[in-house]
Image: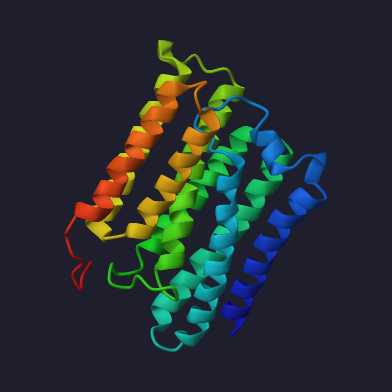
Amino acid sequence: MVRFALMVISLIGVITVNALANILPLNNQTTGEISNRLPVLFTPAGYVFSIWSVIYLMLIFWVVGMWKKRTQNDAAYAKRSTLFIISSILNMAWIYLWHYESFLLTVVVMIALLVTLIILYGTYKATDNLVASRLPISIYLGWISVATIANISYVLTFYQWSGWGLSNPLWAVIMMTIGTALALHIRYHHFDIAYVLVFIWAFIGIAVRNGLEELLVSTAAFFLSAVMLSGILFIKKRPTARS
């Protein structure tokens, strides 16, 4: 009961902190205003961030599902609830650090959040792909995977990284290619469609934001989205009971 109460408090805390950070706004600037301050080519269009509404809604269903399953597997319940609480704390910490422009620390916290969600994701079998099981975590992990790349890109731009002589558009394409490889890896080995769809959603947003001004980036984003869509349609490996 205590663990479940902490999970509910954590979820309410995350939603509240993220909302107030933009309503107040925290440190007199919204999350998007900070993001748009630098010309980071990997950053998607503003509408893409509406995915947070989907994530929060799915997490509400997930927490309710955790309540129903709390007596079925005590070890799994304890591990998942603990990881979720940690992820919520990291999420709120990231918001605070981002708004107060501690950008290097945001990368550290974002990576910690990513690792926490990867571990949480790994507690599920590939066959547990339901709203009350792995699906909400898949979407959450997918978005944090994208956000980690975007966060690192922002920090590198902020500190005027030279890019080892490569242009910003080329680096954006490289990062999208890495993201695509990761998404297809998850698609094949974990039979996870939702995770890949998050990347497609983000990449289309990147293309929309860059438009004709950065044609290489936009074209690559659309092309790689098509590659991932093909992966969803044509990868036929099925999950096993042990996956």
